[in-house]
Image (cartoon, rainbow, N blue to C red; front, side, top):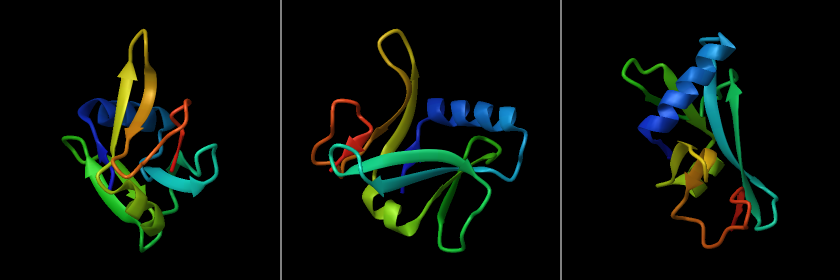
Length: 109
């Protein structure tokens, strides 16, 4: 399953607090498409299936991350980070299962 860095955990926690809904989790998924074959998808989701993989992050466990079983295979060992700098800004996934990725960083194979 995907791991969140401390920076990503803090940012997701801020975004969840802004949403004001305690029942939401960050869903990370892999979908067919994109210029390299697969693309990443992330969104807040309140509909958690019984077969979803769920992990909690943060000191109080308030940041929940869910991944569906098919995506979990492609995200095994991956890391979600958040950067807020001059050169890079936003969430980025480092995935050891990706053999190549496109220039935008949102698609892989």
